[in-house]
Length: 255
Image 1 (cartoon, one colour):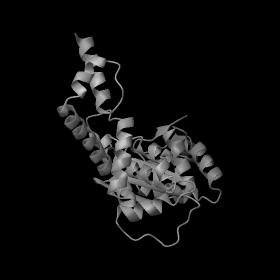
Image 2: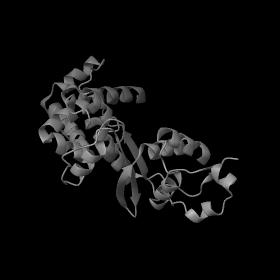
Image 3: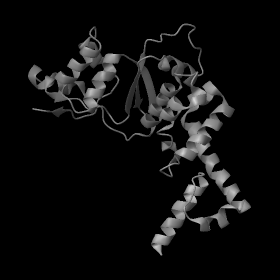
Image 4: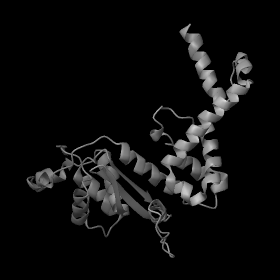
């Protein structure tokens, strides 16, 4: 009986999102007027969730365009959780490949920043690293230590788009600069005292944080960061990240 029920539920969900069901018996249900009402209600909830999770994109493209695109995405990638604030993990990739958005090449990266904001907002609380702990280490021990980004920290580098400038101006409903730097931009987001804050991030900072989250020690992480950004001031980078409470406590000694 459980197997039959599971099959029915699976096919029912597939029918809601317009995916053909192998169970022809379900057609007796899906042709009823009430099913269409139910389906529209479910899809509207998905589109509403995407609009709430990607407010910058709504402001950039307009409500009508957004809801049309979001409906297509919802049918292709239904929610995996009842917590709809988590919905839309693949929406940025969808926009990057979406034909009607071809003349807005920055849209996917801007959407990724909206996603970063959401992930910061819902992340678990975690204590920040106390800089004095690092000051007590010898140079050798410091270089062999791995700094782990806090769960409420996100970063993103856009190599060829002014995504951060566009995102920040629209997220805050501020003015966008007349001249944008299309050579690449990055951003660091962090939730501090319940509020998501952000600041510009260089290529080197983003590479450094990528190495840290991969578990690499400070020596390896800084080497990769300098390789990506030869003019990087490593001491200033560490100070900026520590002041931004980007790292979790405790750190890990890899030796």
